[in-house]
Length: 221
Image (cartoon, rainbow, N blue to C red; front, side):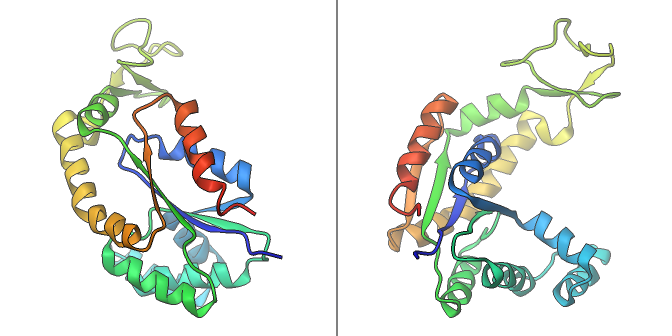
């Protein structure tokens, strides 16, 4: 039986990656692997790699690439053939992509498809900078797409709405610049290997979903 695919989903903040990742997981039997969740699970389970990661996390340091890749390697090695993976948030750099490919190659596996959701920066700034949150119940709103009935007031409990610092327009632009600088080499790396599939994310969610389904057909089992 053919092995289920290993798929990477990429996209800047605000591109709708989270929503679309849920669709891919449900539709293709993929296990959603976000590196943060993977690290927390390994730490909670007290695995050797989890304990090593905890040392860095407790010190406020970034967990080294080799630890994260080791966690991914262990997960993939234990997967049955009919269980695929949707990697989300890793690799973030060209060097990480190379190291991950080398590790998967040792297992006789590879990244089968890289789904790169692209949205113009000005659209993303508008999406993200419109987000406000209730101070008391944490209900999110978006002044552009899902505004409260009364400006600045939560519909549910009347609490004050506030905007997180990282959702303010200048912060959003900076986050997008950092993402572009870090991930452009990753996209190019996979483009040269023929696995990158650009997805136009500046469309209705159902149209984006259909494009992702089309990209999955050649690799889905």
